[in-house]
Length: 298
Image (cartoon, rainbow, N blue to C red; front, side):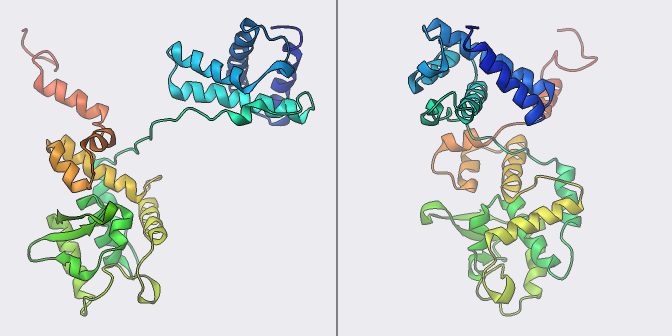
């Protein structure tokens, strides 16, 4: 490193160690990223941080992506640079922080982990408790059994439910309606819920005071039910993703999934779904002549 860069990087790393008390592993990662950044700056002819412009940082990101780094890795390196720039401004080495004008690379949305079948069974059967158990069980069964968005769930009225035909009419994004079938477990849950609601008018899932249940309330119900079963990080969207993943693993057609999920584009469905690694391994073991153990020579 050039003489003007090296002590400033060292001072920052010491601040991470002793001021912010980060682990040595984390500090090492910062050191590697900043060494790479400084090497790039020197190659551009810069000799001190005062010469640094936002364009240099953007060029550094472009070079990292051109070298084959994933967007997540490039975003991590930018985070290290931004943190160092903020430190230099705080220490009055810089009067302005050029990294403030550099946005992070847009990362692909992460898909949640799909629950295992036994985890789902445990959640639906043992999660809902208390005086609202029947209502909550019906909501959970619909989130997982029909793959509804939580906003779609809370907007349902009793008139949208047809227990005889086993359908629920859902108003999705863009006010587009679709019919979603009820599985036998969801049907049983709603038959039990209907017995507690003799009027069957208004919101299908009423909240406090008889009004419509909110998205936040449903999210809290799912979280509490999951924690009772020893599960963490479970949200309504995790149940929707589990619904889609389990259908796909069971051989469902992607077009059918698109309709059930209410996606405008099939590309959205393709990005949304991801078969688990375990399922892929099982498919190879069971379907490929050289994929399993103890198979005949081919």
